[in-house]
Image (tube, rainbow, N blue to C red; front, side, top):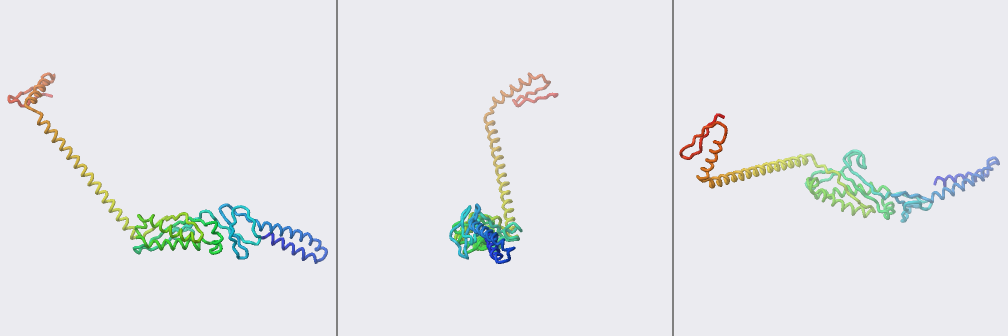
Length: 301
């Protein structure tokens, strides 16, 4: 448009100075030719629009939006038409309690009430993209700032609407995935009706009130202590069982020995021991009782 405007100005300047004195009028023809050339060049360049990869274009002429979408590459359009560029790649919108981490500078986390009346703080990231075929409708009905008009308010509202079905502790622990799937379905439905596709919903963090945190920590500590005591009791039971088995083994051994040792066996073992003592080079005194009891060995070693 700049070249077209410049060409028209040069053409008008040539027409204007053609009626002036001879010294200036001799440049009128040159200005007219230059003006026409620049205007034609501007007209041609204004009618060619380049659409980069990952984007599409939507053209409007005097407020009327064309249903035709401009694809990637060079496109020939009406030189007077305006072209709005839409990003068709995956986009993200983060709402976080950490300053400068989300789309909004400052604490932008979602605060919602749970079923038990407690306030939970939710950090969230939304991954989405626009439907290329719906871009003209988005431009006509919403505009190019669909992030602030659709993505942000719909997400925050649906999270608050669904959080009331869960207790705070359940959101924090065992029912977190269920909550995420539930809000995904509700947000996805709203997005599709507006020409957007919800790719993924990421719950980054759920912060509970400090009092609830302390209660959970106390409960976890109590459970750990109970598990520890159960382990100790189990270990003691195993040790008692081991001693019981050991005692039974000793008793069985003594019973077997007592049944197998007869008087003749003991006499035989006595004779063997006496022979070994007699053959030993060490000095000793052996006293053999008359009643057949075990001999008494006296030695200087």
